[in-house]
Image 1: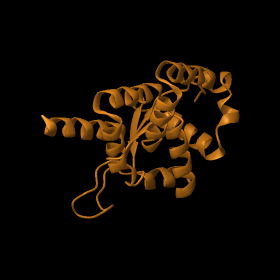
Image 2: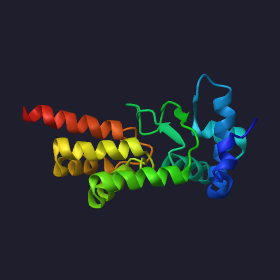
Image 3: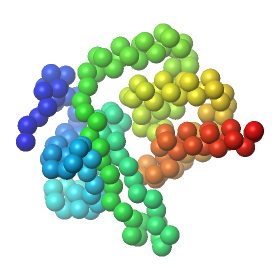
Length: 186
């Protein structure tokens, strides 16, 4: 298994915490044997296979998710119980990027839309763990222009109290809320 060149080029070896580095290695191994960069597994299976504690796994997963290195797709809760018979978690390796390039893009958005609007969009993006995803941040700004700031705030308010592993705590779900509310008003 080889580390991507970007890992060293952009000093990710110094930026990632130990749990994030560990889950990064797990992700490289698992995504290397799957089709594309998507792989699925149960958290308990990952913990058993790699002999790690739940807290280490969660810190690594969430850290890489917040950095926009992986995307996590949680299965829906089953009708039989909260966690009983819940499907495996899906992981997609998005790749490594230049943190300096990300900062330049963030500065560009702040310049183009205003610092206040940009900061508001980053705050909302953080609720769905996308505060390092330029496309989502810019789309949130555009949604504020289309639907209004108060409607966007309400949509994010609805999902902000959901657990981190709730499939409804996602930007896709926020967009669905906004579209549904717009349809009701027609």
